[in-house]
Length: 83
Image (cartoon, rainbow, N blue to C red; front, side, top):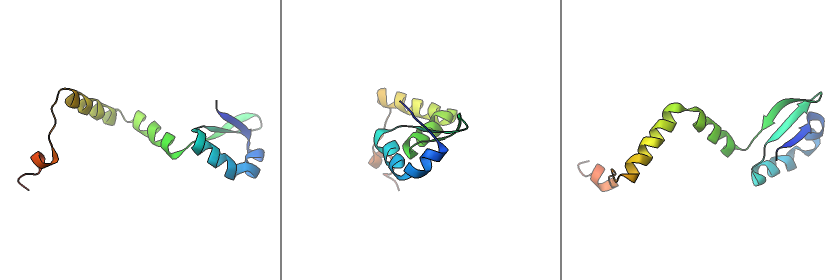
């Protein structure tokens, strides 16, 4: 469940809210005049969102997973044996 709080309340509790967001993997929705105004998330959640938004990266990951499942992989030594 997300945490929803008005900006005025967040100001006084910011430090503890930052710890809670990180520890519990929560989102903090900040409201202003009763409407959502901003969202605070952990760096890990942001990274996940950025990855999920990158279609080329997701396709590359999918190809890599397929290669792994089909055994199309090389060791570090095999790749760099002539270097």
